[in-house]
Image (cartoon, rainbow, N blue to C red; front, side, top):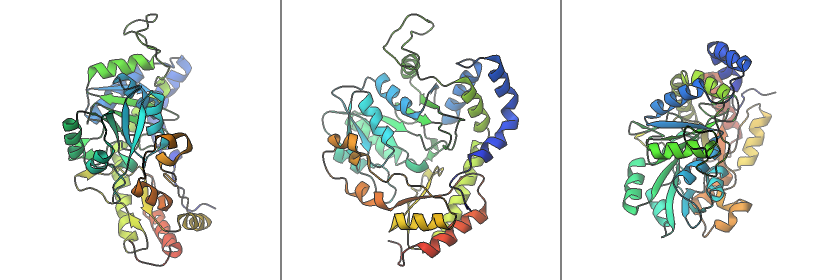
Length: 372
């Protein structure tokens, strides 16, 4: 029997449903399923929340990445740096856009890309870098932007896990050329199904993404097509759900941060390593990830005690079979940490007592020894 679930999406849906029920059912029964005012409203709300000029709702976060790359003119002959410690979609979007991923290593303390690991991956063919705000924390955006500006390459944010994250008071989604968000149900801001968005302060990029995501249609026309595009639109029901949840995002984020603080207090001194939080960052804890020896055994024993956990991500991107041909060298940190990563339960409706249950169970099953 599960004592502590890894997540509880039902609790969030139940909280927001009374507030969106009328709008949702009106749309459902009125058959206005594609586009319309609810989508436009959410796009305005999300752009304002991120501190950017424009948001374009799309089908999912993976499409957001591919559409952004294409809108920025990145394709065959171009290379795009991506950290290897990320979900495969980051690199796969580069391949699907016709470009070549070039993998970078990450910081051992944060698992985020740094100017040093970015510099090590540079070559004359690199046109852009996708900076991943992994697990809910931005890397040093000041230093990274200084580097990309001096190197003359574009910076794209993969903010799929970082809704509301900050660097020095500035929100994820407002750095670089554009930012790509996923609203997969398990995200900090999750829809009732697949959904995503591209956020940018460049009107030209927003216009191209919108056209590309709508079969390449020219603005204001149904039959004239400016590009060879695809079909990746945010549907109306999901926009209603997202607007409803957005009203709760800050409260839910504060709770995530408080729960993470409790984890840090309770786990200090145990035989595991917690990832560091950079001082100017507001980590929004999409995931609370630790490093443990004997990860698979620890995970199995926690499961036997009723504690659900996850693993994000057990295989670095450059070692995934379809991407190995792009791996040009070893990435020691990404390779070393992958077998140790364990994601602990964390969700806004989690109780302090559930955190304590997880920590007590960990204390019983961790290998003997001090943290590294």
